[in-house]
Length: 609
Image (cartoon, rainbow, N blue to C red; front, side):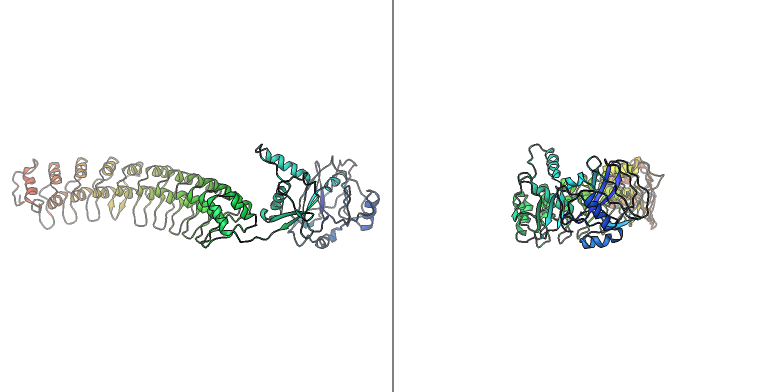
């Protein structure tokens, strides 16, 4: 659109009018009058020139509905702005000279007009609407006198070709300074250039550091106010091309956190997204090192805050890995940042935060709707890794966010299994409270209780056996948790399981009992615990071996004595016919069968009754 071209669509509101105006005038006075849409040209122009008292040198193009699109194309707007439908109905209006009492009937008419143009609130107290006669289906022309006179004093930001980019109200500069300085009393007032660049960046998406403001062929000083610049009405905006002459220095300064040096590079203007041989940008390096002010500077320079390196690591991934909470929060405020982006290893921010127990960052990610159950290639979820390494805070955050408590990886490992195997009792407690399935086994058939018992985590075992359903024991290859605890010699686990009432004589497919394997492995204390708990002393394996027989055969004298004192049957034979005394490892072990007070008096040294 050319300078002086605006579009205004009027519709009544309770306090006056909302308006968006576009008309083209070859000449305008400061106190000029602007007209809008509809009717035959001659009556409109005649009314504008006579009734409104507009000077003869004002030329106002009045647009009919049927010619609206053609007029927009002629002014260059239709090809530059997206189209949408904004209803503009033919109106029957009765308005007094003070702008009150508006009456509008409905109509089906609708015009396509460009979207994204600014709307102005027109206060009836500051504007005057004059009623105009109409003919047939013509739309009325409204003339806004007082308000539009004020708008003629707008500050125009023009492109280098003279095209109008923005019209800024001088009040904006006073408002911006008042608002910004209220945050910090000793903050210097914002300069005219800084405010204009901010507005251009916000409204036109032109990076701040690519903008150069010119007035009368000179660069506008950065820190001077509008008043100090003698209130210019027009400035030219030149958009500079990026250069890539200081990329290495910018990355070094970003990594070191040197703000002024980095800003000097960016003002060249250096391309902020220039990467090194690893694909690392200044933003990624600053995020990794935790330089918050540097990240803000780079964002202001329109750096890509989501740009990954060659290994797929983004600034947010680095912040989550290193625990830089403020940077993570800052990055998550940017709509361009992908909170679920994966690097080359499949790691993503929530996984890394959970893995390293950066639970505050994890909460930020979850609040930002990061995928709470997203798995790695092997199926490991953030909850599984947090449970594996024992980070109760991260586990709690994930559970509160609704993460799946029973979702397993590709090997069938659930969060509860991972925590139980590692002995992280606080995590196990949290998962059980959340209703995790304590019986769900891995693809190999190991349940959490079995894994905890095998590893000797008695506190975890105690949590897992509380509230069990009946006598349902965790088995792996037919072995129970008690069996594997006896095998490994975990005394406290055995005590815990017996106190919980597990089956003391539950055997493997080969009929080996916990007592049998404890006797075989010389677990003296566990044998005593099991005998006191009235475990079956004489239950034999499929080949007829009893706990006493294997203890004698292995020469475990203390266990032989314990079993004999408890009343184990010394005469029970294997399927091949051998007795415990016949298979005793040495004479000292054999002597125990004769010296122990529960021995039968008619037993011979050959083991025959």
